[in-house]
Structures are given as C-alpha cells and as structure tokens.
Length: 110
Image (cartoon, rainbow, N blue to C red; front, side):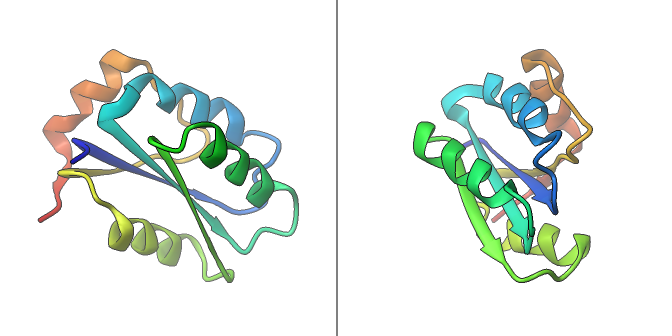
C-alpha cells in the first residue's frame, strides 16, 4: 500500500502541469499521484497518460467529463489507495522534504 495519495486536478493545464507532476515524482514509490483530467480540451489528458505510461507504479490518470474543481478533487479522493490523501494544485511544486512533512496535515483514508 502506498503511504500517500496525491490528487492533481487538471483542466486545460498543458502549459504548466509538467513542473508540478515532475516535482511530485520525488516522493518515489511510496507516493501515488492521481492526475484527474477534468474534461480538458487541450493536450492535458495526453500528457497525463504519458506520465502514467512512464511511471506505472506511481502515476494514475483518471479522465472525466468536466465537472469543476470540486468534482475532480472528489474523484481523486474516491480513487485514492494510499494511507493518506493530499491535494496539490498545478502551481504547487514539491521538494521531497516538504512533501514528506505535509503528512502531518493529511486526511487519513480508510
């Protein structure tokens, strides 16, 4: 079981999602990154799928019709398999130390 599930809600985010997702990969195999493509009309879904193919043990992509930020967050939470859950917005970047320190304010998924 993964220690931490991180949801990254995305909508038409092709221009800036790579920096965020790349920074989360520092968590390694203990982290599950759920990229929720909320009905994007640009290349967001394709970029997310590429991450899932390249990092199959870390990244999962979920595609859904556009339902807004809240629905994308809830979709991530519903699909989380880690012990803890966190939300990252695309303008966030994470260093491994900060990522691990965030566990003190996470939602326990059970």
